[in-house]
Length: 314
Image (cartoon, rainbow, N blue to C red; front, side):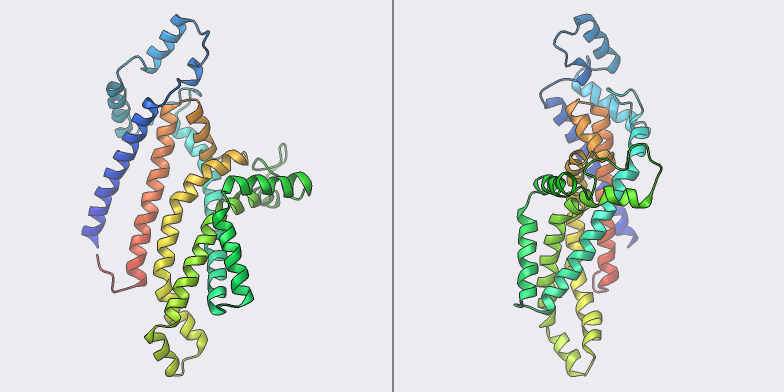
């Protein structure tokens, strides 16, 4: 196990380096300029002063080397547009993103698992067909479109749930108030992954229900509940973990769009604004955090494979 962790750790660092380097050069190649330099009437001397103060007058490779050197020392630089340390800005917004992402992941696993197992237990039934239809609708519906639809229905027309923000302006923290703001973005963020997980669990559960070891367990007179939980569930967890691992990047990537749509004050909406303003240090800082989180989550999924199925060795 230890050599495996060493290899995976080295590979993860290489992936992080490639992702961050690619992001840096893509930002440099993109059209447009720094937000504060976007004014076409800006005085040339002021423009030159700003570019010199941020090091933008240096060749791209020099800028890259300077940024890489600072990052290796633990300094993520300061935001061009906000004049604040990038690390400080990310840590301020990270709890909101974690709250939204974890809530969406819990909804994905719980609803996807229950719906998938229910559909597999009654294949071909009206319940199975209804759940399958809903899963196809979830897969075919773009998240941003679903978000706009839910805002129009539950916020504008019915007035049941707030459609933007994280809490009522001017009010003190209240769990009920926070949950009311969390419902719509979490549901939208979880919709596609829930539908996909439900489809995989249904297929995996049906496949395992007809395996020889399940028929043997039933022939020994084991209760159906024990057969389902001890034999089918354990073998069905491998593809479930795979889908959960694959859904993590989409949860993180989709959070940027959903946070912007619902004005959720997380690092996703901050990254969107940073991209619009060409705030390179802030974009790279968010990319570093998000990439590290996705890589660490997938490494954890790999380790869980061995725990669920002892036949898997590293």
